[in-house]
Amino acid sequence: MIPKSIKLMLVASLVPAALFAQSSKELDINQAIALGIANSKNLKLSQNKIDEAVAKLAVVKDNALPTANASFMYNHAEIPTTTFTLPGSESSFHLPKRADAFVGTAAVQELVYGGGKLKYAKESTKLLADVARLDADKNKEEITYAVINTYYALYKVLQSRKVVDQNLEAIAAQIKQAQRFFEQGIVTKNDVLRFQLQQANVTLTQMDIESNRKVINYNLDILLGLPEDTEVKITDPTAGLKATGSLNEYIGLAMANRQELKQLEVQNKVAGFNIKSIRANTLPTVGVGANLYYINPSGNFIPPANQYLMPVTLGATISWNIGNLWTNKNKVSEAKIQQNAISIQKDILSDQVKTDINKNFQSYQVAVNKIQVLETSISQATENDKLLASKYKNNVASVTDRIDAETLLYQAKINLEIAKADAGLAYYTLLKSTGKITQ
Image (cartoon, one colour):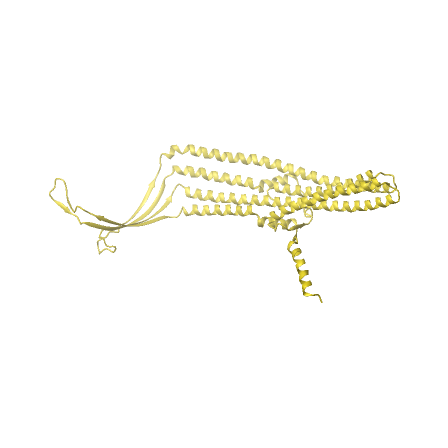
């Protein structure tokens, strides 16, 4: 039976470990992308811009509704002089010492025809809401690529660490072998020291890699909205990559999907509606309205019968600013120039997109070819390492040759893992340049 005091000590010793234990989370690249999108503050800001554009559209729609207003007024007058005689006349008017009156009005106005300006304003605002949505889509692509970029950076560091760990194990075995050879008098103490120096150098590399891993892991936690002490365990992101198509296929995808090109198309339509709206300034406007008046001079809030007036008027108004017929044409010309600038911008951007895709396409091809070259170099480095290991055991090769062969082998392994990651990232970079990373 364990005493109660010892139990408490055991519990107390376990509490700090539980508090400071680092949590971990295994994520594949698609899960990481989903988390990044769900927790992105930039995307929340983009959604707020969409909501703002939709609200502006509702305001424009409200402008097409009838306007109405009502007022009610009370007047009290004190009259010091109660007798008034007209000049050149002997007759006089006798006025009361004070007077009260109630006056009320109510009016409803409706614009029947305004040259189509309300319609154009509504269509333009609707298109601006589409621009905000396209901007949000572009931000979503940027967030997705940022997650992918950081995910691959962590993958490269972890793969490099794995190879370095294997290298350290191999060096440890080499040190034991060299120590044994030294005790047998086959090699000198210098051989043992050279292997120990190699071990120290690789350990320093391991420390640098671990430091980089912590920095990248922290950045990924921030991007994904995870607790900042979460250790992200990742899977091979290159496993699900698809075969690439032709250059023209990717250019076609970009012409159809790039948000910037779509935004310029929408802005071109907005500019078209702006021209129509300016031209509408030369057209007449037609409005109808109704007015109700209430006049109560009796001084009583509720007047006696037949002592108040309540006329109702109906009317229509046609107005036409004829001066716009000759002052508006330069405004139309200016709007056309602005629309033409948008078309030119789209042509320039289309050329930039094509060159961007071609560069990314060629980069991906080079990255894939590098993998094939490095796989061949690993085979050669492996054979060279085996040969030098055999020669060193037989005291034919020097310790320097043995260390160099081993270093070349593990450097080639690291280069291969980095090349695989670079090829995967180059593939996603190519997809990003089409405007749609998740094809």
